[in-house]
Each structure stands twice: as structure tokens, then as C-alpha cells.
Image (cartoon, rainbow, N blue to C red; front, side, top):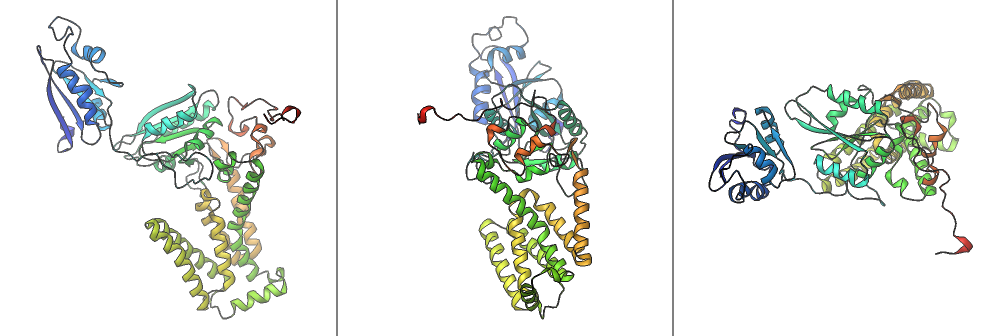
Length: 490
């Protein structure tokens, strides 16, 4: 096999099948991708020693040796017959062991993968207090099994394909037949099949190729590390895209309101979940508008402030060399630098850099008279509120800087001009044909039960209408729990 020239981790194990009428054979695999103990026990040892009693071993004419081995000898769960050199090469590169038998024009690909993978653990990007603690890993097969354990239904379909001319990455599409809109499934397949690239190393590669608005700052495809989140989205009528080699699973269609929803919202009582949901919306508004509003008010609209507050701000800015817009932009950029440094460094060092760096730089800048103390408070509050909605950190950072610039040049008028542009852009976005701002606009009162508030689960008897699901009924109506009779607690 010339394709494996200079491939030093390729192993070719030659042996003879049977003990009396021996047949030459050899098995080919890549070291590190195959469980060698299982290969030795279930393939090599079986063919070399446990071959007695068969018609093939006795020399009695029978069907082809490959068929006998496949149907009567090997006790391996997954066996695939390969007929071409290309199929054999792909099977070996995928972690299979390929068995070649003398005199046969075909071979057997034995699935005995044994590559080292990370164990299932709690995801660090989606931390919850209550709920499942398991997260996806880098193995496609393991991730599929974790979803199937959540949804024990034969209607959960999985379709596999290979993408990447060089990497040949396995990609899976999961959906629930009878719930999902078939047009969305067909559109996902169509976009995936159009991908022509050398490498797919992470699900982000797939996202950049199939998203609806590649030049938008807002993501139109979701991602998650939690099997319960992906399972819930599948049951609402979405499609999941699993990529081998990454723990992040893509989901589509993706709506703006999903950034404000957490899996824990559905595991706790609806009253507190509603309160937390409203806090997220409030933190979102603060994170977007607070710096630009401060710049606009201190630069153009001082009359909007109470006299005592205006005097305090003026006193703090006395002697500072930069206008408010420069202070805001400078502090925002410094904060982003600190955040990036904290993420890229090892965790113990990164936390120290983020905390100590922010304190030292903020205090030193105020003491040196470079910026005013109110600006430090504004930037700190903006940074804290931006972490409340982590799914929107990237677009919020860009939108915040844009609004600061507009506020510095045009004041309140500039802010509203930027807001109008952002809202127009959001309303024009689609995610696989579904309006990105649904159910806010176009409005759908039935779906508003899970936007600003989170009503009790027994009151959400329909799936989101905006997704165009085939089966809209999630549960029967009027499922409110009945109180115990005669005040009994049994």
C-alpha cells in the first residue's frame, strides 16, 4: 500500500489461519488507534487456534473463506467488507483493523477502536448548580450515545458523512423524526455536502461554512457542551451537528432568545427562574448601553444629570487629559486585553492576572489622573454584566465599541442611530429560514411563555411555533398538578 509509505506507526501483523489447511493472512492497523488486546483476543487468536471443526479447516469444499470467517468465525460486533484499496485505506485511517486473506479479492474492516480519549466530565463553559454534570467529549460515538441515553426513542435519527479532503472528519446529523421540519433537515444536509475544504478540526469550521450570515457579528448557529441542552433542543424540533474531535455540538436553527435561556431554568421553580431571566435581560441592556450613555451624557447632555451628581463627576474629571470617549475606548480595550490574558494563561495564573491586573491598573490610572473614577465604575459594571450572558460576549463587545464611538460624536442621537441599525440587522437575520428574533418579531404570543418569563412546565404544552415543527403538541393541555384530596399528604 503505497499510501502508507514512510508511515512508521503502521503495523502489519502476518499470521496463518487454522492449524491443518493453513491460509496466509495479515491484519493492518495504525498503532494507537486500535485496542491491541481485543485485536489479539477476538481476531488473531480466534483465527489461529479456534478454527477447528469448520468445513474450511477440514479441507471440505465450501463457500469463500472470507464469508466463512465473517459469518461463522469472528465474534466481533462490527464487521464491514471492503472491496477497494481506497476503502481499505479509509478504514485504517478511521481506526479500524483491516484483515486481508490470501486468495480473496476483498477484505474485512474490524471495528476495534481503542484510541485514548478524555473521560466524561463536567463542562467548564456551561456551569450549573442543579442539573446533569456530564458534558460531551471528543469522541463522536460517545457523544451520540450520551444523547441517546437522554432520548430513548427510535425516531432519533443519525446520519453520518465525511467532510475534509485531508482530515476526513466524521460528521453526524441528529434529529427527531416526526418533530423536526423536514425542510430544515434537507437544508442542513445540503449545506454540509457543499463544503469542499482540506480540514475540519473543530465544529467552528462547520459553523463558518453553513451559517446564514457569515458577515454578521451575531451567531446564527448555536453550540453546547451539555447533552441535556442538545436533547432539549432536538425535542423542540432542531437539528444537532456532531463533529468528531470536539466536545461542542452545533444546533440549528438558533434564535436570539436562546442566549438568555439556561438549562437550569427548567430544573428550578418558575418564579425564581423568571426573576433570573429578567436579570439576564437587564444585564444585557446595561452591558450594551451603559458606557455609551455615560459618554453621551458627560459630553453632550449634562443637563440630564442631577446637579450634585454632575458636580461630583466634574470634580473627578478635573485634570484628566482625555475626553470621555477616549477614556471609555481605552478602558474597554484594556479590559479585553486582561480578559484574553486570563483565558489563555493557565487557570491559577490567569485568575491572578485578571483580578490583580484590573485592580492595579484601575487604581493606578485614577491615582495618576489619566481617567476619572466614575469611568472605572462604569467599565467594571459593564464587564460584570457582560458575563451574565456569555453566549453574547463577542457581539456585545463589538456593538458596545460602536455605540461608544457614535455617542462620542453625536451624543444621544448617535446611540439611537446605532440601536436602529442593530435592530434592523437583527430583524433581517434568518437561521435556516427561521427569523432570528422570533418570537419577539414576528411576534408569537404562544411562544412568549419562555422568553421574558418562564411559565411552569405543565403550561408549556406546545413546542415553539416559529421552528415549523411537524408535531407541535409537547404534552396534553391542562396538565396542572391536582392538589391532594382532603388535605392528605400521601
